[in-house]
Image 1 (tube, one colour):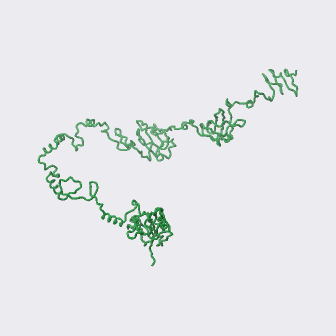
Image 2 (cartoon, rainbow, N blue to C red):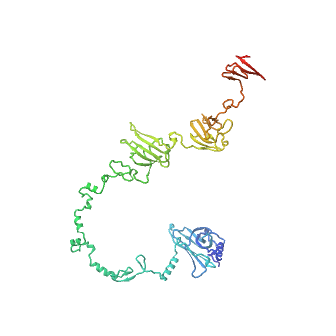
Image 3 (cartoon, one colour):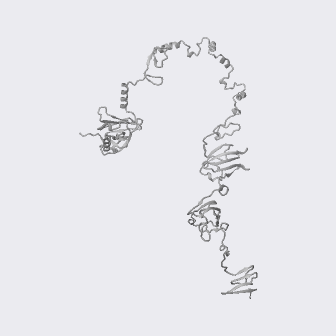
Amino acid sequence: MSTKFKTIITTAGAEKLAAATVPGGKKVNITVMAVGDGGGTLPEPNAGQTKLINEVWRHALNKISQDSRNSNYIVAELVIPPEVGGFWMRELGLYDDEGALIAVANMAESYKPELAEGSGRAQTCRMVIIVSSIASVELSIDSTMVMATQDYVDDKLAEHEKSRNHPDATLKEKGFVQLSSATDSTSEELAATPKAVKIAMDNANARLAKERNGGDIPNKPLFVQNIGLQDTVNKAAGSLQKDQNLNDIPDKAKARSALQLGTAATLDATTSRNDNTLGRVLKVGDRNLGVTVIPASHGFNFNSYEFAAGETLFIEVNAAINFPAGMPEFANTFVYVNVIGIRDSGNDCALLLSRYDTNISYLAWRIHEANTSINWRVLKIPTAAADIRAIPKDPIGTIGNNGRMASADTPGWWLVSVADAGTVADFPQYPNGNKLYGYGFMFVARSGDVWLQQYFSHSGASASRQTWNGDMSERTPWVIDYSTANKPTASDVGALPITGGGLNGNLGIGTTNALGGNSIVLGDNDTGFKQNGDGILDVYANSAHV
């Protein structure tokens, strides 16, 4: 008859066990046992398996040891605690510390319940494998990860009983002691017998009985004197009585002064967070005084709340009622509210509101108008040049290679850092096509659709352009400014250079020319020289040929 339930070593396990027997080989460290349900049917172990058919639970081994009767048997045990369950068990597997399946087994079908099902038990699973050399297997477990089995505990107790490890008791450690009936011993290593205890009790019974509370003292005044309490008794005659709760102090003001208590000692403390009764001492927590965390206020009503000077609030803006208008940056967030001023009537106040996650702040004033309506006025505390409609002192941005001068559309100063001006399509250029120097600053001004750009190169040359309909682009022309850094040429202003040139038309010296043609007049507009053909130069006086 074939064996129905069996444990076999897998192919991977056999290879590892064989490799461990080679000199210098690594021992197989079996650390984990897994439990499976076989997919619903009792499986047949297969040496080619690398995992269970359907694993349902695994844990570190509780014990792995060499069998006491068969030296080449290795016994591995796993305890499944009562709180684990809710599954069938039909297969077991042993894994080493590298995750390889070393051995696989089937077992009699058993259902492991969990406590939540109304039944629970601890169940021990045991696998036995046979190896040719016990030295090929590491027989150790992590004791911090497992629960001891009953057999393990019994073995350890039996081992301890046979040992001589039974130390004597000390003042700090438990152990065995020797009895003694001595009543005058100072030993700290002996234990008193009932006889010694009786002698001590008989001696104690001859003393004053504690339950008499001194009632059995023959001469009580002499006893008080002997123990040095007579002066105390004398002083107690004029002492304060606790049942009077200090009402028997003759001069309470002097008593407070002697205790260095100020006027606050007789004042009432506030009774609630918003208590504003005059004369009361503000205790920590009320009006958020001295707290390390201010609770957020939801549904806070800015018109009806009675603010107190110096208090700080933390308010959810979206849930607030009558939140002052004109502070759009505070939508969908929280603000700190610091009360910086209070009027003596109407609870008119001045507040500092600050967004909790940025540096945006506003001043707000609550003012009761003549008709008793409440009006809020707000003023943003500037943190940037734009807040006061000023130009920032720092550059807005930078125009570089392959950029566009028209992209500078925000008012202010822009850096221009163009090594190759040819890569910027709308870079300013001279009439001859040469680009201006590519490093400098550009000033941008805008008012609606009116848009001005002024470029100042580091070499001194400058240019500007402007549009009135907001369509600044590469096609918007530049006007090159004349300056000492860009002097106009004679041709730029329609003049003859000092080196000479051709005059296209007549010339009048000291007057306009009335002779016309190719002529020069001197002082009189019709007196001068006129060329009337190739090689012919005539003289004219008052328009008459001479």
